[in-house]
Image (cartoon, rainbow, N blue to C red; front, side, top):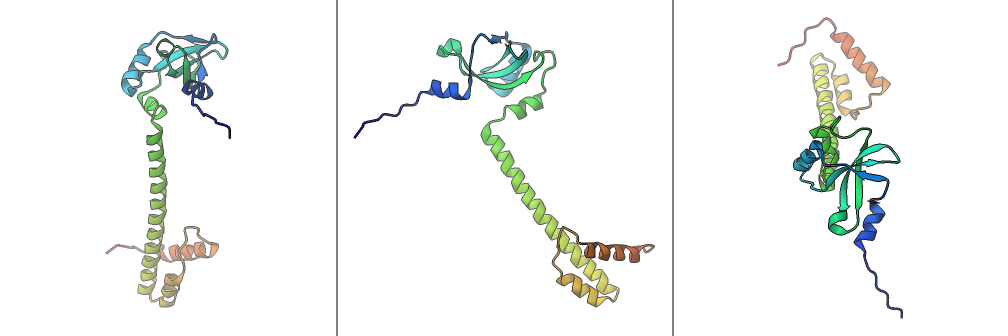
Amino acid sequence: MIDMEITFDPRAHALGSGIQLNEHHQLMPDSEWILWARRETGIEDLFQYYHKQSNTFVLAKWIYHPEKDGIGILMELEAFDQPLDWNPPTKDWLRDRLRPAAEIAKTVRRGIRDTAKAKQRAKRDGVEEKHRVADWLKRQGKEDAASSLRQRQWSNNASPEFESFTEDLQNSAKGRIVTGG
């Protein structure tokens, strides 16, 4: 049997998911906007650099800081055509761009839940509307139509038959005053 030891090198892993600082990256001095962004987000490792090959200014975050860790590995967050102080991103942009993954996942889950609840509400409202129309038909003396309508399965996707039915109802209600209560 062969003994194997699996080791994890966090710097090698960071190189796989980040970018190593090299001659194509020119670090920019801390601007007022970068200082503000650090205060606003609480992320002390934010910085800006100029990418010489692509001629862009990049907002980035240190994964490994060259002065503290001996190697500069960074994560690019966003590239801009001009320095960030010239046309600074807004507070809302910064908040949306630098949200933690857990917060993004929570927002997505909330959106999925809200969509499902909206569908349930729409279905319930549709059923209630169907019964309201059936009650109106019954008051008009059209009990067969009311009974038929109550037995139909309600659907958000109106069939041509249902559209014809609603058009007939609207035409019969033209010129009448309808009050609630």
